[in-house]
Image (cartoon, rainbow, N blue to C red; front, side, top):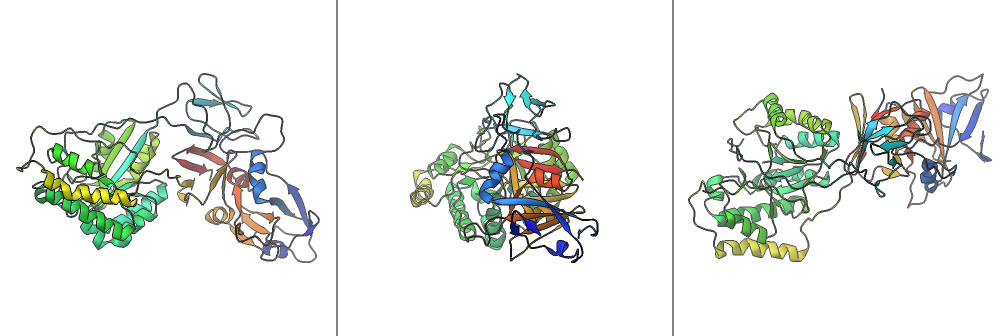
Length: 496
């Protein structure tokens, strides 16, 4: 059969038609249906998805069978975590978020905005002040509406691991498409180096939680505390290759730290983080998941939340509660981020009296850890702040497809995803003809073909085929129901 003057090799589904059948080919371009915004209104007929795809040099043909052919488808002890004391939240910055229902979209549109915007019948959107909102990309954020909402962030912090429960926690975080911070004990890192390494490899932050969590030693002498911090720092580096500046005091700083602890650790380059939401999962052994979830929901809300939960031995109920905790904050409009060096730490108020009998921190006590920290800073190996692109999470019913940063891209208001990953996740099949490079995808009772102009591909470009999500689903008769797209959160819900 002919396509654009060149021979198109038929895939398995097309070949199954037999020699007596015929196939009609229809060459067409994607409709202008960007996920994140509306088409340009400058009179140009070039659609945003086509423009973004031009660099890929791909063409799309829909294949339908002729009259003679059939359809070709083929525990540690409980600890007192600073009860009654809330850390003061850091100031939150403003964030631009686009969220909304896609059910009432018009032809040629499909973009949505937050509750601050409403969608009109012609596909354009306007804010409450009447300001027009056009299509956006992450690299070119929209002008903020006058009444833009403050960014609401949860820093989910998970203490006392890594343990046998941590892999399940990581699986949940991956499924939900969020990043967290793990404050690890040095002795646990040494016992479970592969798990510590996985934490870092999957894009989460790792912090120092001292070596053995024993209060009487840590708070009986700063020299002991400093020694445990340095030992744990080395253990984390040996397992993960990361030098972290993040530190959490076991039990929190309230009535455990004095100003000498704070000053010495700051001079050594560490940033000490308390929390302002306590899940209560360490008040006693075996706190049930229902109580943990209730504690979270009873906690005060703020623009910035640092939520404490545990993944150590004996905290299987905490793991059980984790999905409900994540969904609770997502439904309230929070995004999840890992801590890094740029985040202002939360501190409990300094207690007027310490729980521990010890002398003041001396210059000699400080000297070793300050020297250690300065040497690390001079070497440049410490992990500093860096923007992390969020994963794209695609939902359909109970099934979830997670594409990490680098596995998808945003361009001209559209989300481009790997065709093969998308189709196979949805229960279809995709194959590429090695001779021609033609890709055939079968899904929802329909087969479609993609032709790559440059074949065989160069080593630089490879044979990977990315397609615009909304338009590709539309070709198979499948709609996008809802989405939330921002700098820190990217989720799409597909209609079942």
